[in-house]
Image (tube, rainbow, N blue to C red; front, side):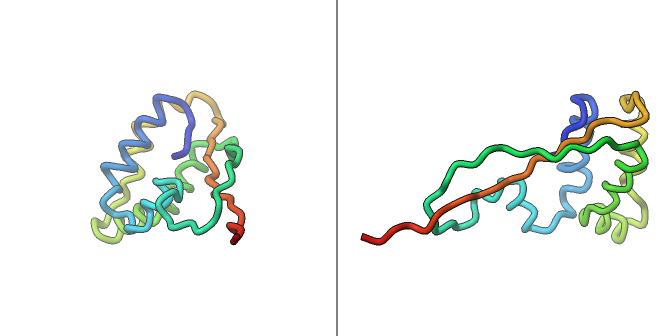
Length: 116
């Protein structure tokens, strides 16, 4: 899950799980599980943890949220955007023009198992 600052992260977590959670495709769980539940017929190689970081305005953050498939499904079914309510809650904590927004990058690395 993306990280900004603890107060905002808690609001996003609630939004992700409870507001638009029911609208995610079933396959979304693969990302939530960091791809660990996908069959992986290779010898697992440990990998480093990677993070993408961006400096976003509140408007850029809003634009990102509206790309979520669960948000689009919510809008299609209910006729209103859930993002507006989240932004009202987030705005008091968005205390700078731009804030650092970080995303984890999940990797599964492996090598072909040698046959004996």
